[in-house]
Length: 415
Image (cartoon, rainbow, N blue to C red):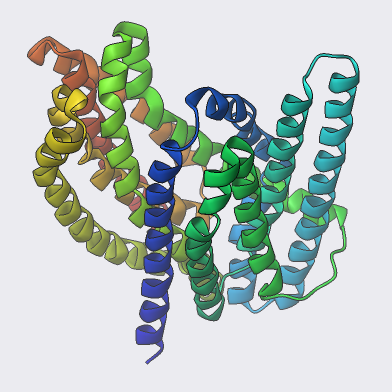
């Protein structure tokens, strides 16, 4: 009965996440028809830097993401709450400091005539929203139980609706309406997480708990970041050794692959705390191994079916809707299968994090970089087409990297 309930909750959470992604994609295409590219580029020139402020969390959110379910599974709720309170205190303080610093810096630049009034307002909104997102990510890490994920599903469905409810703002107020649209969505998501947060506790900073969160969380954050960064290597190869046309033709391949990865992304968000909880409860790494391998098999079947379906319909979609990108059809069809293997690799990557085993990750990530460069070069020697070469290289690198993940995962869980 509990198994069925857990799987029903997982299905609702993943489905609501995919629905939210679909709404985001559709609304995004609608918005592009209304906003001038120059205005949009001006706003995005500020938002592009916002992601980098996540490093200021020092991995505490990633640490809590692992530690909270682990210690709850181990039955030590007191320690779990100490780490939650410490992380909450640090993240909340950091967020407000960043907001205050943003307003202060923006005011100084404006008074010194280094920024126009419009750019000053954009700077404040962009970085303040980024600071708020830090708090939202932290709150998201506190949703660990099946009951909590059920609440997350409802929050995501509500936000899915808002993607369309807020659209008139963009239509009537153009770029400023779009900025309000973005801020409104961020505020709504934060409010939902705050209202339904599973642990109603007062935050309190403890130095020892903070140090433990950083020691555990920063390696998780760092290797996740590097692993994600390695996915951009094919595009980098095209930039360095190709030309702007090839980069443009590869864009649909990257977009389709990113869309495909939404399913494993939401799946991993659900499975990671389940694995950490299981390890905390049993202390048996083999059980985590069996759980992850079983989930990997199911995910692989779903992903290979989905990839095959998209590969079949891509020619029709490109021909009818994106005729300028026809020369990128084969690259998109090939690249999409790299996402199949990457989804399994990401799941096992999270399983290793749940066991607090970080050492193999440096070997795996380095090998991935070698694979993508090596297989792209070999493929280019064979097909003499750089666009196809990086697409083939992406698939082969993820395929062979899967064996690295399986080897190290089995080795550390069966010792």
